[in-house]
Length: 241
Image (cartoon, rainbow, N blue to C red; front, side):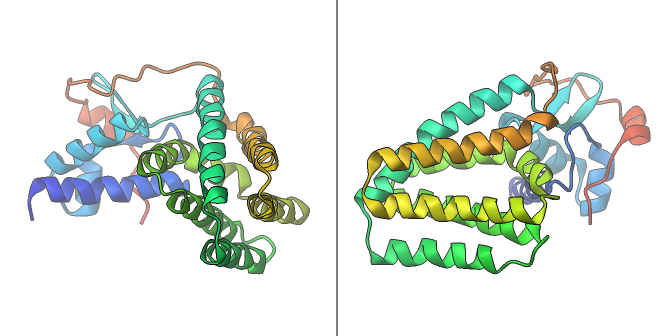
């Protein structure tokens, strides 16, 4: 297998760990330790970290290596305001194309979400992600699909952290918000769609806001200076098993 393909696999594993919250914001990512853990050389690890830096999931700093990106209040505001616009557009396209197959697909995801045990936010969030991915697919607009996936990916770890310990009544409300979106789309009322999408994203912002940082760290995705591996090894974090 080529180094490029290995780098893609490493990037996928690290991206998934960041999205799930296994790798927390601010955690150090040490090339040598990651290479040992994944059984690869440091070259594809470095390439993978560069790709994740371009996605703003990882921050690379001269002589300090890489760490999982944190989220500032400004980041959250900018991402979320754009998410509202894109997801409203996406949901309206689904409404225009509404049919029985679309209804069945989204209803099935909501049923699975509602069937999750009380306290099983991991399952709720899996279905949450599936719901938004289904909306993106049903919108039949590949560029919007790519953009919304990138934006959600940037805050996925924070969504997980913010919702991981919701009390039962808030878990139920979170699930219910998806049914409200489905009902608005099915109603044919465009204004209702815009309103419920804005409320849904705004509620997510309210949960995530306490996890943001107050200032923007340096984020040079193209920093070319090699990290200090010895210093990183002392402070580094391995990818979770």
